[in-house]
Length: 160
Image 1: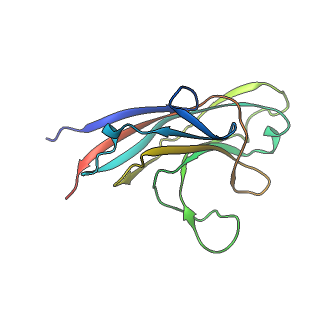
Image 2 (image 1 turned 60 degrees about the vertical axis):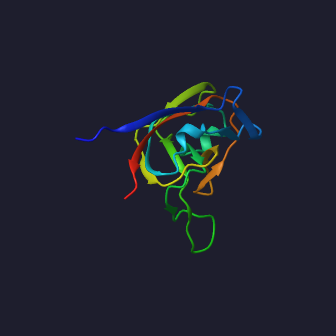
């Protein structure tokens, strides 16, 4: 039986390792070199995701909120225009259609699904952005000055 080699990596939009690339929307962090094993394939699981957001009139237009990143994980047919696909970049999302949107208050949303994918490389910097499905029907970046975090489980496999 083989021993499973994995690491837990918690990421948030707070702390000194976080660079805000677009105010209250996009962030960049340095990924420790110990996590970027070039001789291994990796399975990345998003085991937890959290977004705190104000439920104001802007929130009323959202049907889902989530976080996208630059981790390479597939293709997406939900594009703004044209017949091509884009890179699949969604780490996690939360359906907001069942929440009371009338009151203006801060709410915390947790993801209900654990997404996973395989990759052969992890970038030196992890870029992530808060997004929502708005009246355009596709995920677009949103401004959110509240807490965002997610936990990744990275499992390493020998290349064959």
